[in-house]
Amino acid sequence: MGGERPVSRHPLIRVPGSWSVHATLELEMPGIEYRSGQHEGGGRAVWTAHPDGSWARAHAENPRDLPTVHQGGPRRPWDLLTDALDRLITGGELPVTGARATITSDGQTVLSHGRWHLGR
Image 1: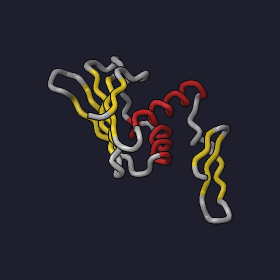
Image 2: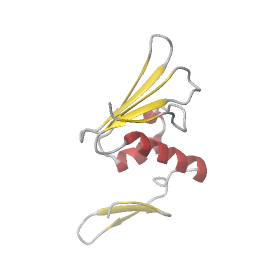
Image 3: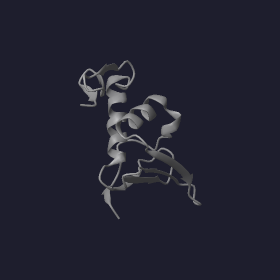
Image 4: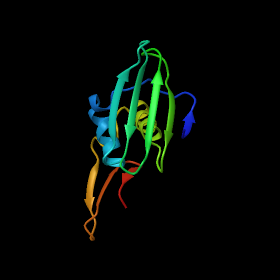
């Protein structure tokens, strides 16, 4: 069924509703898709999928419960989300906010902000 992290450190989040989280994940994993839904018993689930076969499903019975996470594929999308939320909580903002863009001599774009960088 894929890897399982018994309990996430963060409650379920509606990623498309948080611009900086959504932008950070889209830069780190372009093409990632999100879905969410309610269980009949009132629980909630969030799914992510990527064209490379990476996926994650997180579910919690109550809105404030920490979700159980299952994920698989070549990358771990929920781990990327957790890392982004950790940076937001500890740093007050995500590195995509105020990132510096550099274009290399071979035309590659590199984004950086503090220790965070994306690209080369």
